[in-house]
Image 1 (cartoon, rainbow, N blue to C red):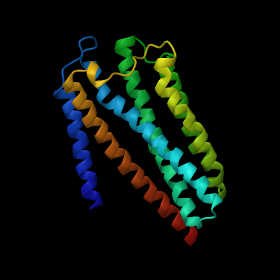
Image 2 (cartoon, rainbow, N blue to C red; image 1 turned 90 degrees about the vertical axis):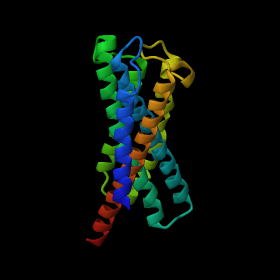
Image 3 (cartoon, rainbow, N blue to C red; image 1 turned 180 degrees about the vertical axis):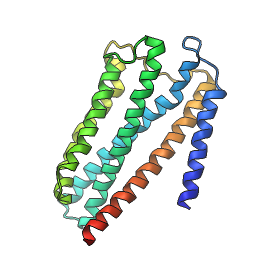
Length: 221
């Protein structure tokens, strides 16, 4: 059943990408390069969602710790936070790469210290640091206790990234809305948002199962 779900999700993902590339009109100003949006924007949205999972899982771990839960219960939240962070980092890296590809023909440069780009890069490196920090602590329980407050704290950069185009003068455009977009573009964007969401859930689930089996293997040794 799990493999059937994965196949269906990836078929839907491919369909959503095909729809965005072939069934939507080119932008009046940017032309065909605008269609990068159908991967760039959903990747960004779902990276935020992944980091929100890290935030919630970290809070849940801290709350459960005060109630003296069973160790397995606490480690569930820790593994979930770690898994979501890993997937979120991949999606943020994809967001930055696609933004660079889009920026070259539209802004004339691969990178500029725009507010949105800079805060997104900071977000990427904060979560890379979060994952790297976890590697330096061998004891699972101590690692979880140290990582949980960090997972809560660095999430504060997510709203800064989101509102950066409104708070500061920036090259990056302000978020569009369905009322300002062609209906065909809105449909393609929504299809890809759900496609990326499915991939996000699937990858977090897979990564969690790997982390769980690794923990069980270490305990058996």
